[in-house]
Image 1: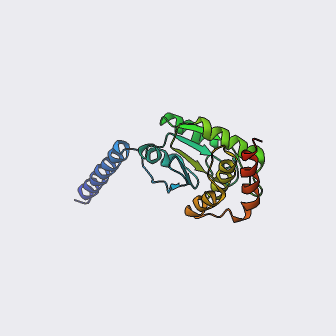
Image 2: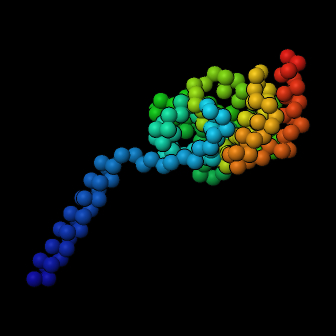
Length: 182
């Protein structure tokens, strides 16, 4: 009898393992919601995107993603190349404009402005927390001909939980330069 009980227990375990394995291979890919926050009607911001977010990003009808987080900033962070490849497989346009912590370089602001002018909308910008993405957008928007005024730019950044108060002078200077045709 003990041999039959052991055989029965093994058969039950094998059956359970088969059911679990079947369920794992027949499940659709995990879809993890992304916490996107709206800056404008066509431009949204979020924290680090991972491959599991891409199905949700596509389902929410974003057309493009712009990665502003430098590769290798943190262990375990997905590379821009891997996110870009997976995004394109989902039919999403992808651009990579790395912005390091600290001051936002003018060339990054210009690159973001150029990308925003070219990519399909709506677009999702991301970095580690969304802060650099929102702040870089603020400077790009201040530079854009016909862009929002300083109060509206700062209000948009604040609406996504970030601050651009320390960028007031830069925002005003960029707005003045666009008015003068520079």
